Image 1: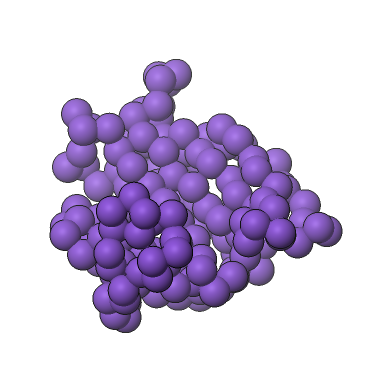
Image 2: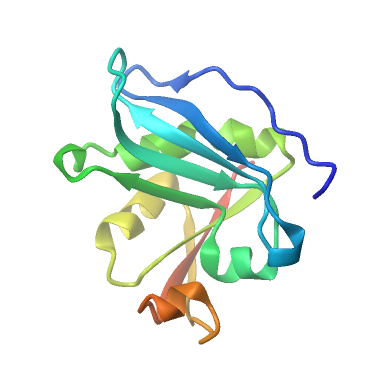
Length: 153
């Protein structure tokens, strides 16, 4: 991924939220890390984020099986408005711009709101997998991940 180039993006909005690039991480091939965009999720006209969404651009085995291309979170007081699914939909074009036609999203089996976000997006539930013991997620206490496939085209 050493020839990877980040794109510049204006804020994405659907009228109810906006998604703004907060940071870009180039990745690290030696550590198995792919380039990543991190976005703040905001209410229009408000500078403080209500959550965040990230897009990892690549297809390592670890990413596809356990880590996922997309991560998201919404601050507790803003949950229940489908902001996570809206944010994912808004950054869909970024993935397509980088040649990704299928994204994998993973979450813990007991994380029902995250699973619901995947359903709202139209992702297909594929399976629940056991995490290898040598992963950071396993060391942090996670034991399994649900795998969802989101076909963008």
